[in-house]
Length: 427
Ligand SMILES: Cc1ncc(COP(=O)(O)O)c(C=O)c1O
Image (tube, rainbow, N blue to C red):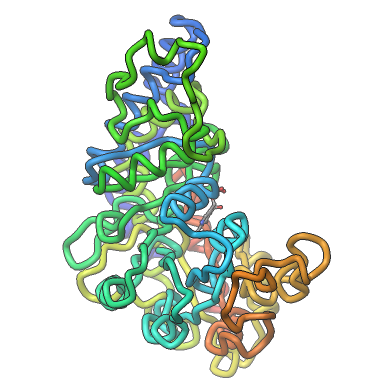
């Protein structure tokens, strides 16, 4: 306890004092009021979305940014814009939120699950290399828990095979990889503003950043019914003259698209949250530091390895519980943590290929309607089963995710204390 108290320094208190109660601050209200005061026209383009997109691009060191309704459609649009469709395979890690894989299925393509590394719990680039085939079209490295994948070998692989790399950064904001901003390395980067994330747009929301003008134009057109008036730049003037676009003979849909747009009210909240993103990330770093403080020397609690040169952003603090060394199983550890006042010790996701909908290929009713049996698909992935990703299958039941999302420093301290009591109890 003494040890933790010492960490309760002025810096931590100061950062937390800047986080508004309920995650709603002055500017959240101000921008929301601006939107309400302006009223709602009948255009799908709003000034608030443009402001949010420009601020996003700047913050994430990208040329272009687009907002959308969530972090699943952002992946979906990036895949479609990369030409992913029936007959294609996409490499995704087996340990991630299900959205990373379902986005591939929404394109009627085949997700191929890549195993994780035993220390970082992130996509294993060597397994990705083993699983790439002539049918692979794209790869989605996921910066799980806020830590970047080893991007250099992934980018090398992509270059060699002509793959599109879409970074799934739903859990990683302002992370770094060897001095570079996470999100600036692949061909596009996807973000989620769902409630559990570092910043939120009031429940759901998402965005894509990208440096390639043509690719961004395609992504945005997928998100907006394929309208030919959509450009990569957020504030691009309409390129089609009024007399042409209002004419009865004007064709609005040269390409296929969806409606993935973000509501203007969400954009207002997003802009305000983005302005304090540094504090939001720093608060999670501080909380991860508290857990680290009490667990670093414990041999049976092995935290996610952070390689040198990586800037972690701690969407969660994750450890592997070595049940043999502890002499207890994961469930006993979790139960004790809760008894000592711990909250929210979650397991990691079930490896996706073992989730019933995947193991039973139950995507479109009958398994034979899956993209894996489409006549254009010439690959060999016809089912998913145990053994596809042995490292993840072995490690996942021992992973413990501790929450870093507390907005109150004293609550965070109590969580670290609960962990300390648990450790002391078993030591
Ligand atoms: C790694 C990852 N990818 C994608 C998503 C999907 O984002 P959303 O919930 O905004 O659709 C999430 C969030 O749930 C996620 O954690």
